Image: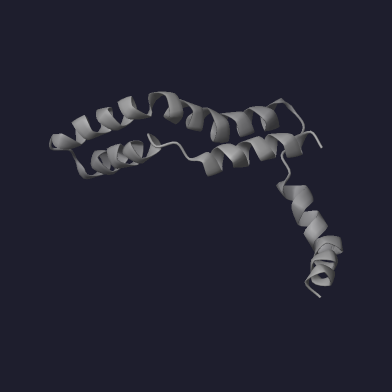
Length: 98
């Protein structure tokens, strides 16, 4: 029963059109965008995560304007690598060539 629903969902024209629109384009910009937005930040967080977190915490200790405080709090969260984003970026890169 569930298999039939999944098959109907997969073969539905709207689903196929949506997946076609979501797929990154096979050009230089499509490849660079997947690498730049999903893979590179996670690799940087893996290698330099401790330094990024230490930098953001050092800046947060001083009195900052409202906007800068949230900026450094966001930078602090970027210091922790997200393996989901890395796997998602790699899967988009693989999907790009198939």
